[in-house]
Length: 173
Image (cartoon, rainbow, N blue to C red; front, side):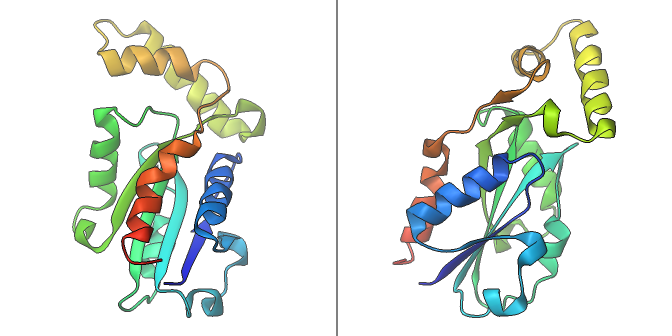
């Protein structure tokens, strides 16, 4: 089965995952700003990779608007939050309120790169980090988040892609 990956990356983490996945699946990874309808036409599996920003998967509406017929669809969301956090399931549920059954959903922890962030995003993250540090009675997830979001870090790991690779290969790809 022919597979194509379309990705949207701002600071490079999602691009890294898309390229690792493309290598593992021997398929193209195309940046969203370069994708053309003819790139998607021959594919039987289309994977959209993008990142969480304030709980929303960026450019997800673009992917949902694509006329993909009976193609298999998957979304790989990335973000700084550890994958085992309950916050991830909640965020995925919020992004797929009525159409969750139409997509295979995956998450891979990525990281934060303050040096590549736009000024507004940087300020927003610093304010959020400050608010989290001041919060009393933090949950375990919130404690971990406080520890992580103070500085840039790269939490990308190839093994986070194993569920996506297994899913694609389950179709004989």
